[in-house]
Image (cartoon, rainbow, N blue to C red):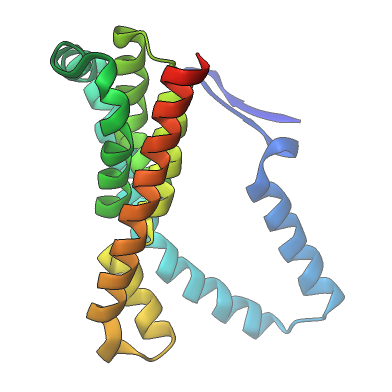
Length: 194
């Protein structure tokens, strides 16, 4: 069961989409627990209010990434980085992914911005594009936790706003450690195993 829009080269296989199953589970839950319509409506309004900024920002990240690909900017930047760092880029790959995650507070946004660049650099340097895609994804995921907007949201949810700076310092230290571990693993895999 696929949704296709050939004009935009879009295909969504519903049965393989986690979002479809979450939506289906939500609908079933409403009926099983007999949740009143007013609560469903209030929840839908709150969710839409929280989701709208994320949808807008992620759409912008994806649009900028696609613009960079179509204007050949990604290829130009990848070529420059490949000439400058060569195979040693593998050490910098987690840093680039981490910067994306930190700035966007979204793994999706970070990958939209940098995954094409990472894989292009891999092709140019002879490094595994899959390995650099792994570095991008893992590093961005870790670094989103140190994003100021995420820390602020967590501090607000648990009513510890006065500890926001302390939380940001601690989680940033943890993220730097995680990025270091990712870089070590990448180097080990790239130079020892392959």
